Structure formats: C-alpha cells, structure tokens
Figure 1: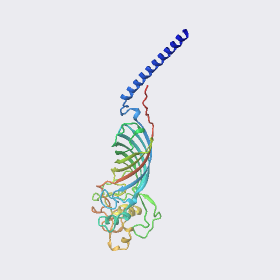
Figure 2: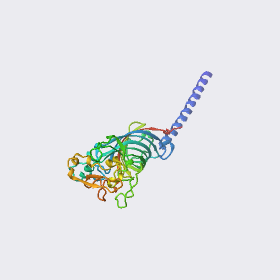
Figure 3: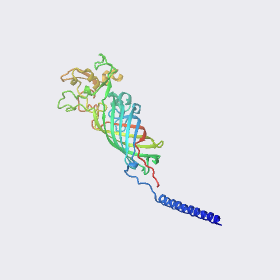
Figure 4: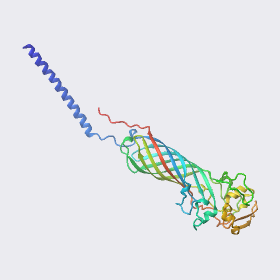
Length: 359
C-alpha cells in the first residue's frame, strides 16, 4: 500500500507541475498575441531606422538648345548632335518622399548651322548662311532635391516597386566652346597651318570682346564671358526597384542657364577690322564664305573697307560679317539651354534598418 501511495503522489506532483507549466506557456502566448495584435510598426519619420544613402553611376545623353539650333525657338534641337556623357551620383534619403542628390556629369554639347539648318526653309536659311559651329565639353556639379509621387512608408527593403518623381536644384559648371579652324583665311587663298584643329573661341573674342568698340557699335560694352557658370537643373524621372539594394532610374532634365555663350554666339557681328592682324579671329567670327554656294556666287557678296585700327577690305554676304545694328550673329534675349537624359543605376548603403523584436 505504501508503494502505491508514493506512486500516486508522484503522479499527482508531476501532473501539477505540467499543469503549471502549461498555464505559464498559455499566459506567455496570450501576452505575445496581444503585442502582435497591437503592433503597427514605427511610424515613418526622420528616425535613423528609416534613413539610407545611395551611390550610383549613369550614362547620359546631352542635347543643346540655343542660337545654333536648326530653327528659331526654345524647343528646337538637332537630335543627330546628341552626345554621350557619364555621371557619378550620391544621394541621401530623408523621408517618405524626399531625397537630396549630389551629381557630377561630364559630357559634350555640339551644334553646327551647316549641318542642322535647312537652306530651303525660310526660317532656317539665315542660320545655314551664317555657317557657325561649336563643341563644348561641359563639367557639371549639381545638388538637387527630388520628391517622389508615391510615399515609401516602409523600410528600404519594402520600398515601392517604382515611383515617378520631380527634381530641382542648383548646379555649377565649367564650359569652354571650341570650333575647328577652316582651311582658308577670309581672302580665300592663304591656308591656315592648323586647319581642322579645335581652338578655344573665347580666347579669340569673336564678337569683339577684346576690341576697342565705338559707342555707336551694336556690341559696345561687351565683355569676355565666364567659363564657370551657374545653372538651375529641373525635370522629371522614374525610379524602378531591381532588388533589395539596387534601383534603376530614368530622368529627363533641363538646365536653365544664365549665359548665352555655350555656343560662343549671342550678339551682333562686328567690323572685321577690329581684330587687327588676327586672321584666325576674323575667320572664326564670320564663316559664311566657307559655303560652296557663296564661293560660287561672288555676286551676292558685299565689300566694305574697314575704318578701324586693323583696316582691311572684306567681302561678306550682305547682313553678315560687318558692323550694323541689324546684322545679328545671335539673339542675346534667349539664353542657351541644354537637356540631360539620364540612365542611372544606384546601390543602397549605410542603411540602419532594425527589425522588430518581441520579447
């Protein structure tokens, strides 16, 4: 009987212990369930658990809008002169919509009247006869803020599959317009020894920037333009998620400029005598005589003798290459613009995402 008593007592105690353990387990489960039911995650704000940075690389396409566009008008450009550019990017994400981006872009802008302007189009004939051309290697450093259309209330891992966005900011860029030296000087006989070489146009002062112009001259008071300029970048884009750490973006952005000399063209022609003995400056200021249509029809040329210090007699197409308030070389009222189409790949780093923990 005593053995049976001890066995029953042991069974009772073991059952009591198991029942107590079960009750404790059920209590803990209920407590965790209540936490799960009420957990909503941390609200998205400016906390460190939601902030991340990206680095990126881009391939870009540059298009020029300005005095050497095919036709008058701000939206005229020659797509055949689209030139590539490369870029490096860094960004810092602040909240559900906002990102601050720093970028460096290097690329080339191009334009040429003789190739873009249609000589059979009345709106473009002036540009074709002008026959100016340029290239400009631009180095741009910008800081822009972007705003997403779709908010990302979650972490970087659960960010939207894609979102359009708008951006605007401030940029500083270095430029230096160049053109190729023609075969002949304005006399049509003497050859340039460096024909075909790209030369810096600013150094030549093609619109009389370094000449002593008279007060009655259309370009009186003109000064050399600065090679370092400010711009306002703005545009639209769309960002697509590739995986947890990589995005691909496409952007269409314009640069509002405060200069009209991206192409070295802005104001009026000057009397070619103001260039003195600088035959290269004369040939780069007025290039109409390089056209076959002009060389084969000398009857359309207007000849004048300069009364400036450099003197000389010059035969030019009427309305070009001579001092007069109506002899426009460019339009100073419309500033130049360029467009940047960007294809960008970015990588997320510096994340501080903390997963929720239940205790």
